[in-house]
Amino acid sequence: MSARRARQRHARQLAEAERRARIGYECRDDDDRRIHIATATAAAAYELCAAAGFEGCRCAPAG
Image 1 (tube, rainbow, N blue to C red):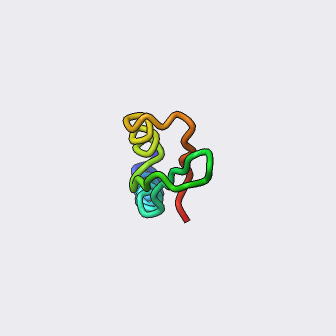
Image 2: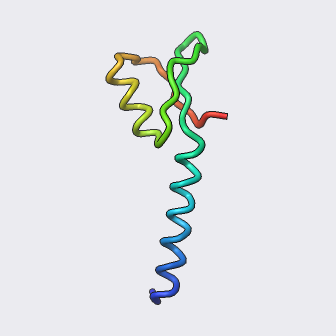
């Protein structure tokens, strides 16, 4: 892969990561009540749910 293509690919990856971070993740329980919003990644949302003991939590992009 050329250096130019590698830079373009890296720029696209950074833009996608920033877009995902702005979306944030909203977590709801089985009764569709909001539990919390984790701004960052799905992994962070799931980690917060696990730490809080929410087994049936649904984490999805907020919005």
